[in-house]
Length: 291
Image (cartoon, rainbow, N blue to C red; front, side):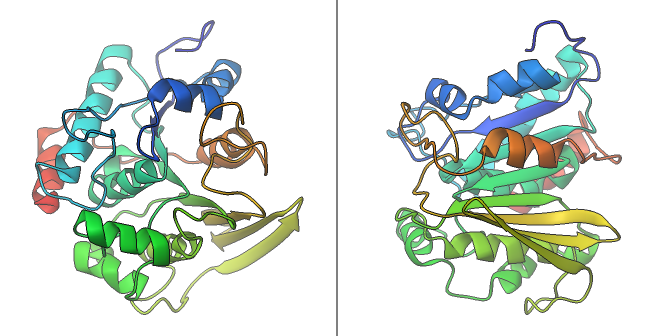
């Protein structure tokens, strides 16, 4: 909670740790997101996976069943509901970001609970929808999805009824834990969720703008003058938070500042005017779609 700011109508950022064994304290310290929260006046919450659910604190991002990733996603949504109710945060400006397995769970939340979040950020995350078990999850991480990414989205959601989700993907091109191709596939999947590409991944609306600077390639997918999906590839970055505190595991001094220049800069322009929060019907619908 940032000091010196009124809590009412404050944005909320949900940060999901990853890379298994990472603690929320390490994630907060390494990403420096709390420093930004103090500077710009938003709240941050760091849900932590229980060791009772997974001995290495990994999120079950690949398993949408109620006793695994689906239940974990529902718990995050319940936490958001409770915080918005308690502190009167702005329900139209709730955002979710994660790295590695945390990015996987962030994607699950974005797909199944879109009215809860105004935008999503996926750092070093796996492609959505193909993995069902720990073994297939490892295969996706190492090689990316084997099937057409957009088609995988259509298997999970009726895209015509999906409200859209602004999304940013960040990935290091030297990542040997989650192959960089996953970022390209995630970008295509969120382009599909935003109806910018068809079920085969062919673009049918909007334009693409590319920028190369300081070892970072940024590709923006723009529609109606608004940036909908952003893909950032960082040269020489491994499986680590870009421009974080490299004294903390899974954070690197390489690249642009993922927290400030990439994620918050992207989030602050997004708002969910139809946010359906603290509504049992919305949560029940999301839980049903996870089953």
